[in-house]
Image 1 (spheres, rainbow, N blue to C red):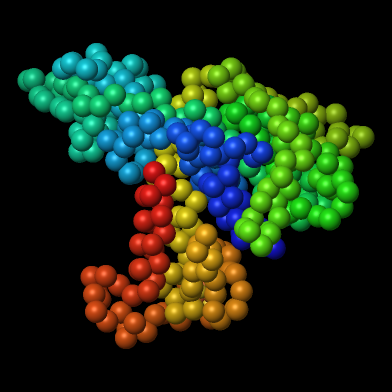
Image 2 (cartoon, protein in one colour):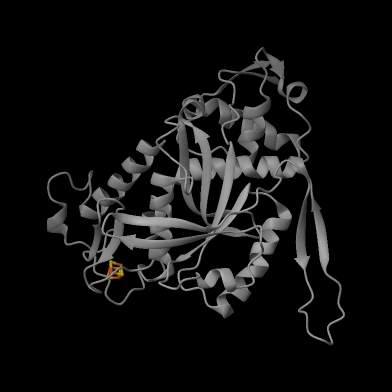
Length: 344
Ligand code: SF4
């Protein structure tokens, strides 16, 4: 299976069954928000699971469906309960105050703070307290066909994840084989990384834990591996590291949580040509994209305006609500957005 399709199935499985081996029904309040392709500037994870609770999501809801970026988070986390000059109320941002002032106005537009002017001074007070809603962040790397070369390429990235400790857990998801011992167990994967064997069954996709991860320390300092020697005999170069402080990690985890909250994993449609006449959604449990022209699943990289088989939806398909409602492509976008909202 292509990595893209595999990734969507891992996301779907995680949304329904996270945590692996656990009883997701046992604690009805627990929620897993699942998203794709999130992380830091240096490292993107294939699948991200943000663990939270229904009650915490209810307290997050007044801040809107869209994410709070780093500047808005600065305001949301520190806005005072009573009127105060924004420079007195908010901590030193580490960048010019004029950007904070802009963020305060954006926060007021979003409706979670109130502002007023006293002379030249902008004062603010919060309308809602920003909740500490991100309990745990879990990173999953997807590799359906994990051979020795792929494992070698991946192990460096996974070592980076473990050393940084930005996520609480790191997993590798691979397609289950019929072997007695899953081949992933024989590869040089860091021992801290959990391994999931994922398989399609008549009852849907399932994932079995073949190696348990070690819980990392996101609240403590981390190590950013910048460069490491290739390991060849003549290579005497030194590895380079950088310290990642806990405050940076705390902020980054919240930013990741916010992006996951906004996008979910079904945002794949935003980068695909849902307005192509051959675009379909299949499998109501996904739903997953399908291409009528290729008679198979397309990847996001294939499904662009540069695709040789791309054909825009015929205008006749857009009758009725068109141009306000759009054709089937727009309906697809709406369906996926609706499912995303329902999850929140
Ligand atoms: S024909 Fe190309 S653009 Fe159209 S749905 Fe298939 S992959 Fe996407």
